[in-house]
Length: 335
Image (cartoon, rainbow, N blue to C red; front, side):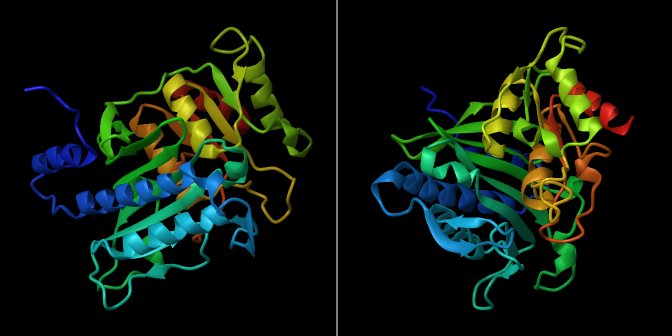
């Protein structure tokens, strides 16, 4: 019989069958995430044709101006996740507090954290954007979620990944057993397995950092960046500089091509001494993915997945990508 490709649901069910303790809740949750991503992808594709580009006039919990497509993506994800029947609560980058599942809807034993539209500053100029997600099991008793269910170490995640809305729409995710990539086939409306068992190069050839922040860096980060720009490195010649300004897009490129993404702490904004990126909805899920692919992620000192979140929106420096590149950057940062 001709093979038409493996869907995400089939892939999940295959692994669920191998696990005697699986309940099917995680499969259902990821299936709902996929449905949400299809709705978001549809709106992204026609964003320039309808009135969902530009600003809403609001400011989110991060102090950032909110774009209309941000709001749409956030609403879709919250609505679908609350009705999945398998979670107890949601945390979004766009909302200050935990979002509970209404009492009239069924609840489950999982919770989800997401950045509904990462890279949203690039929406109006048609650059790749994405949705990042992180899934944990509930640890407190009872049907309600508590803040402590969310304030966890990254290695406790049961699944994490991202949807990338670009020239093609992709899902890259892990459940702790390797990393797999699926590409949306618009002709059938399904994500099909296109990149099984993704691994990242041990040493890359690209460094990604916003060098316009140079004047706000300390000497250690300057030294780390100069290492990648010189010929005195593992590669023996300068790395290529590539910076999109959309975390999920920069990460995706480096995952497939090898390299390091760096967003260090800086002195640019006194209110954000640890930099711009959020631990729970950005750094931790991508760190789980990269480690499962053979890479590494630190905050310049310690492994990201060993850091316990102090609050829902706590920020962290991030050095993520090819293992040897991250190890070298971390070594320079701690000298």
